[in-house]
Length: 172
Image 1 (cartoon, rainbow, N blue to C red):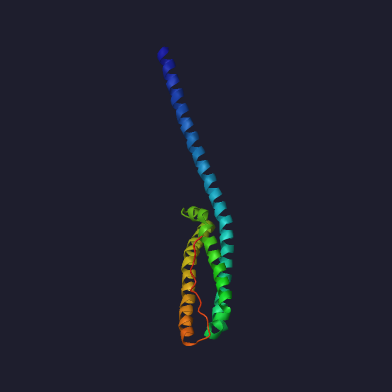
Image 2 (spheres, one colour):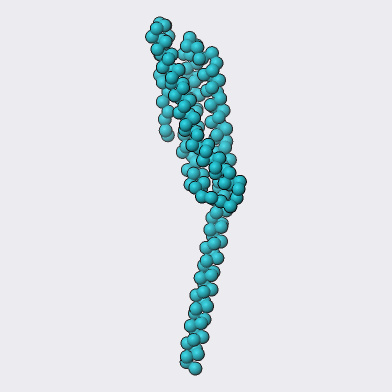
């Protein structure tokens, strides 16, 4: 009789351990699913913010292009618009820094692949746009600085015009 009690207790213990293991496993899966759902909600929310930042970035880029392609491209008028251009470049640099420094969470969350097609599309678009921001502004500033160099060379030949400093991007 003693053997039967021991066997029953062992069976109950084994079944309890199996039941507890199944409970922990399903609980862990449920927690992972909730965490993934939260990440996807964060991606959606943060992507909207990022998208607004990109729109602002593009608007400022258009302002810069308008200033650079207007009469300011002629050296005689360039100095008059230099302060406006510098102000636009400062705003351009500021939004670039906001994009670069303000989207760390989105960078981390977009390192994973999700079951939701829309979320994966957002992450793909984010990663591509995020990488392009730095390249684009550097090229635009480089183009501006090339114009400044040519303008400064022109001022040496044509007296009465002040030189302009090249623009330097700052990371904040």
